[in-house]
Image 1: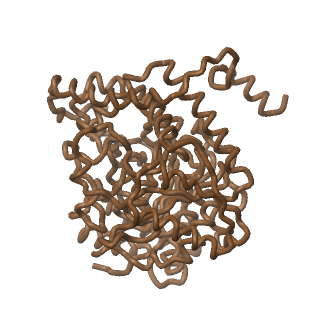
Image 2: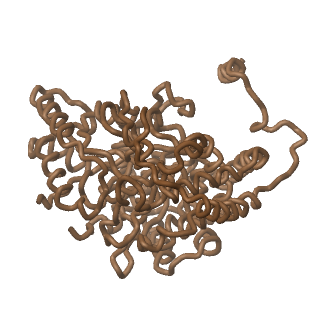
Length: 465
Length: 60
């Protein structure tokens, strides 16, 4: 098995310099998947033939002097809610086991058009909400840092596959933390862009007003490179933002953060969410790093985290129930018990509850905009503890608290939000911080995360093979 | 699309118990929502027809 693990940036450099080929990268990834994934279950489908064919085409194009784009010859994989033409797209559910889309989702098409080679489809929690469960067609993904532990969800396979070095890029989706949670627990970079920046066309929805598409990768730089490929309107997503950011996401990444004003939402980790001391220390140490890099840190006060969380979950399950209502009635046995129970909770939400929650959402968003005025970014907790053991979270209650995750504010506001590794517990499990910003300040958020990552040693450590 | 024939039987008594548990948690979330009565039009409660929205965007 190849022990060489590429990032997108390093793979692109090696390909451009002729030190490797797309075909070789695909074979290296397939070898690692064959060796490691039986114990990780991060893939629900490996599309080896498809990847080899795409790699041959990428190599042939390069020989002819044709540059396909940013991902020319770079392997990637998709959470199995991204529609792929002619390739099964299940959302990890028995309900969609025979679902073979006729066309690619916009993101899948853009990644392929930029020269990427798709290696397969990745595990998720059922319909991006269920939770790890054993009554599904595929087993739950395992955390590469310790297979007895949870990956986070719902982009569980995406976090595991990137952390284990099976692919340098995996797409995830985030409705209330589903990119950022797995990034935190698997020790990778995960970016939830501003709502509407990346089209969701062809992606199985969970809650239309909260769903975001975004990348998980080993580094922030890789997330920025992926964003350059996937962002921008496609004319089909009703929530699309008018245009991608001028200048792109990767170009200004290395400009540093000297002089930036960065807010810290201390009450999330000091008062609102009970955290482990080691996770709180990681946040405080991260603030010291940002100060050392020249940023000015100022305190920011928002509504208590429980308010954000309640508002998000009421809206999420109202919308999700509307999507699943008929199947819950007609095919309840095709859902896992945890998914069915969570989705059915949406039936408890009344029309007036939804209207009041929508109004509350606007008030919370207004508050966020006022509190972050004049700031370049905001830092706060991502997960106030390391990944729990998977067996501790697969039982009841199925609809309990969100544990130690701090995700809801940026789901509700649609603000850009990045999770980066911020150290390790004494047991070797990753810790994380979250960097967020004002809507459409995505490039600034990535710049802060990149500067932090470059100033810390956390990217030198990989999970045990 | 044809549905797969792998449905498991749902035990109605167990599901009712799980639903009660989830409903209690959902009620706690709903209870946090402020319920001020809106006597004036608010953005969420206003329907803006597509043509008017386009005109507004264009600065008309």
